[in-house]
Image (cartoon, rainbow, N blue to C red; front, side, top):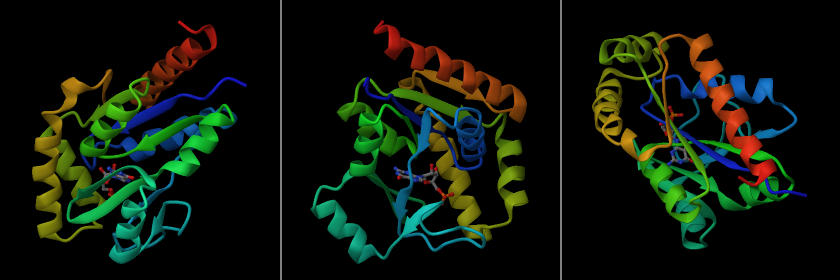
Length: 193
Ligand code: 5GP
């Protein structure tokens, strides 16, 4: 069976990448798998253990780092986040395309280890819209929101390292762009070119 392909979707918090990858997995349920990250962040209301994240304390997270169990990990907005490597490898070997939604530092590590990974950067159309989206989500305190906005500007300067950039000004258009990238890149694996 041919191996699946690894897709890394990155970009500032509030760019809408989470919604986009859910749309992608709904449209291609038989060929994609969304990786579930580990994090030391506290769950938000409605988040489900094992579905949205594996929530853990810092001690357990650092043990996983020490055992080399992460494909990548990074500190983002003051919390630790990481991609458990074993699940990713297992799904790839089953021929599934694995989608990671991670920050730019993590994306850099994945690209160094897996140069064949397809790296996609999702940007919000403007700083103002990003701020409105983060405020609309109302899940963060003001200080946390500021930190996310500052990080967003910093992250945006890294987009040149990615294979594709999607400007998420409307969800339908951005989702269509993501589907077309996905179809093109997953076909490439089949034909080997
Ligand atoms: P949130 O706290 O809003 O769920 O996620 C904050 C940021 O952490 C987002 O930019 C998200 O992409 C990133 N993130 C989520 N999981 C991982 C991961 O496993 N590794 C890395 N490096 N970043 C992650």
